[in-house]
Length: 207
Length: 247
Image 1 (cartoon, one colour):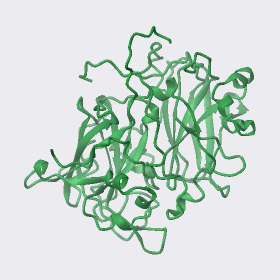
Image 2 (cartoon, rainbow over the protein chains, first blue to last red):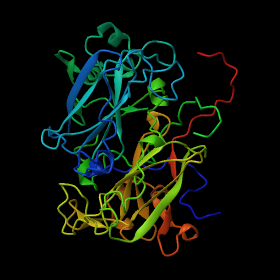
Image 3 (cartoon, rainbow over the protein chains, first blue to last red):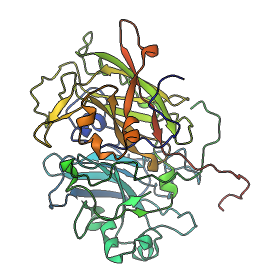
Image 4 (cartoon, rainbow over the protein chains, first blue to last red):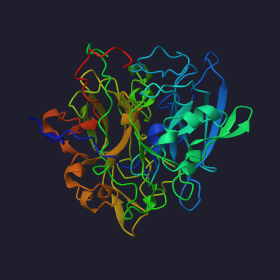
């Protein structure tokens, strides 16, 4: 047997923080390392041919002192307008080929803001067949975050669907559920801040 | 992908959070205000967790796998000890993860990152950017060439130094497999002094992040090889395939 760091137990490789220089690896053009990759992965989710209602999602990641993180990296993953994921592992049909489903955005180095131009996702069923309210999955990494944080964002207009949503209803403390719902700024713009600590700490998931 | 096996449909093995570093670990000071303090809400996997974006070989440029050359003036090369890092990407059932994107980033041979926030004394190397990416083959295998990164000091305790390391960003077939980690080098005496490594509770888990010197694959008069195998969450076996679709 060749020497390897594996043992008999194939447990998942442990996580380590993405660190303060995550931009070099995941968004090198943003980090000023031009010419290695033509563009940063996940920087463009939609084109003119993408089906669905355009939305813009903006927000910040905020620490336990109320300070904005300027070195975070946020990834999102969502269904297309028909509720299908653009993935070979989507078993329910074929998603819009003009939609990436995946977005990646570093916090702005001054304001800490992230911003995604995407489309409103269609509803996706929960494993038991009930319908989930339209939502976007978020994954946050940064210096000081030892394992990437999963959360999800819902749209505030979907009141009936939110009330029936299987995931929101799993959040025992109903007072925490609004941390998962974006604020509408009008004109298809939404604000979704992610709070790492505090009385209004965002709900994070073990998926 | 050349595999003709049917795609797996099972849900993922639960993530063992006692094996991973906890969010809050005061020895790593940056975690103190950035660690969620409430319990995670555990969900069963749904469609968005089981599916994930796939980035094919077609996104790769000809030098994406060679950090000694991909930011260098043509004909020149990054300064440092030439190495090849290679291994396999597997899941917890030992199955290869083919067609998966691996993104890496690192400091240069002097321990300096090409980043506006890194002000370490060590010089930048004009021929080194510090990023690379590969896509695993049908056996889950990957390889890239780089220079061995240097250790560097960082703001934590007054005299903390990171061991030489390479950051890895990993994709599987489902978004729930998403993982970022760091690879260290066998024999590095700084491993035992690092507060970031010490966030991992168990020694055998730390050992899984330590690449092994691989003399068999070392290329004479060219590059020393290091082997680093990586494991993503596995999918539960679907033992019985005769259930009607949708049940």
